[in-house]
Length: 159
Image (cartoon, rainbow, N blue to C red; front, side, top):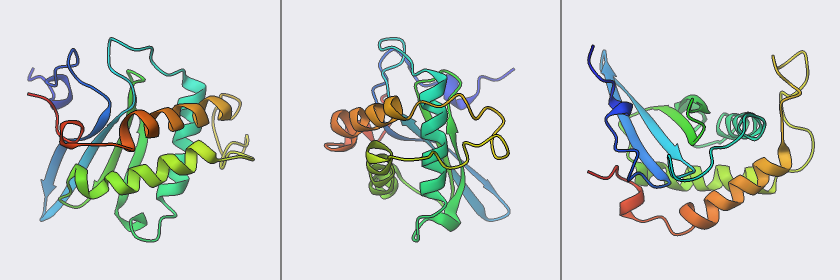
C-alpha cells in the first residue's frame, strides 16, 4: 500500500503551526485540509481527550457561525495522535489565508466561559468527557506560542 500524505511529514522536526496537509480536487471543486498542529509531535505531551473534545465543540461551533467562512467549512476535528486538529474547507486555500480565522477561533476558545455548546446527553455521544479550563489553557498556549507571531516557517511543512 502507498503511504498516505499525512504519514510522509517528518514528525521528528514538525513544530506547532498552521499547515496545508492536502488538497483534493473533484468535479472542479477543491477541498483543502489544514493541519492545526498544537504540540510538537513526539517531543511534547499530547492533549487529553476531554480538552480536545471541548476544543472540538467550541471550534466547530465558532467556525460554523463565522459570517465570512461558515459556508466553506466541511469539518473540524481532532487528530488521532492528539497533537492537533484537522480543519477541512471548500476552496483552494493557503495557510496564510486562513491563519486569521484560526487565530480568531482560538481567541474565542481561550476566553470561552459557560456551558459548552452541544455537550448535553441528547446532543453528544460522550457529553461528560469535557474539560473547559484545560481547553482554555491549551488555546491560550497555542495563541501565545504559535499564532500570535506566526511566520512562514509555521505555515508550510518543513522539508
